[in-house]
Amino acid sequence: MRRLVVLTGALGITLAALSFAAADSGAAQETAAPSRSFAFTYVVHVPALPAGSHAMRIWIPVPQTAEHQRISDVHIDSPVRYRIHRDARNGNQFAYLDVTAAGAGRAPFDIRMTFDARRDEYKVALPAGDPTTPPSFSPDVERYLMPDRLVPINGMIGDLSREQTAGITDPLEKARKIYEYVIAHMHYDHDGTGWGHGDAIFACTMHHGNCTDFHSLFIGMARAAGIPARFEIGFAIPPAQHEGKLAGYHCWAEFYIQGTGWIPIDASEAWQNPPRHDYYFGALDSDRVRFSRGRDLTLAPPQAGEAVNYIVYPYAELDGKPFDGLTREFSFRDLQ
Image 1 (cartoon, one colour):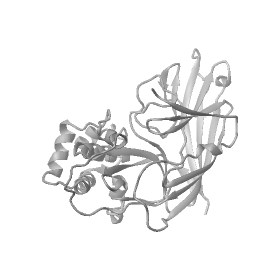
Image 2: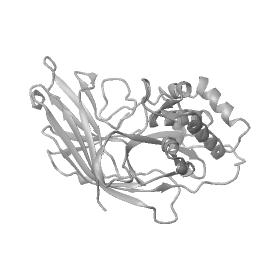
Image 3: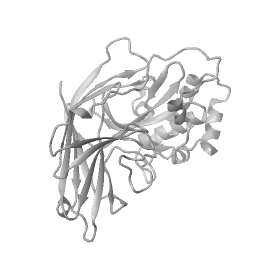
């Protein structure tokens, strides 16, 4: 049974309760990590409901405090009352709105979310040595060995994983070999169609795409090799800018090593920034903010349509069917 944690937000009220401490395990950092603090603005433009329609449901992902980021001063302005829901499976949090033709849906309106974020560098001390005992995972970790709709672990993905990790027994060494393969055989671009869905088969056969495609291939190959791996998505903050608009999302991945915990990687950033190739195996910079985790998502409250591939942009349904008529814009400003 799905359990929802629900908070009610009045119009334009700051919700200090939106910051949740995360329970994720991970390696402790020995020294104070480099950090970055910034104010973030997320605006959703909602059109008037089309003639003949009755209701629109909107879900907006809301970031949360976690082990490597602190979210504070969350403020949501909307002419439509919203509620805050948090799903139990992935821990993702949403501002949820019902828009009716008899109410605010008769005219276009905006939803504006602002928050302050402090993001710390996420760096894990990598273990050494080849383990002599087979891994044993808790149920919360073991579920990240399962396939997603666009991330299979058999067929060509399984074959490729076995080919690339043949003769290797150390899970960390397997993960490194998969990381190197993805960077060597993928090309980061937005050419043609099919990219951006996080389709591991597309990445495997076409050898190009964006961050979702890079990390879907990594996750599929890692899981096929018996290494739990998971997907995270948010936004990258340009390191050389102090404020400005953001063109779109960024995503990365984590894999799990027994005795160490979750270890981050960013294969697409490593491809685009070769001097930091080694850095992004086991570390993430502080120039980012995470909004959600996981694939094939059931939102909170549940949507009527099929599972959502991933969520960082708002998701909407019009009379029970997915609706792509929302537009959005994002910006940031450094706080120090």
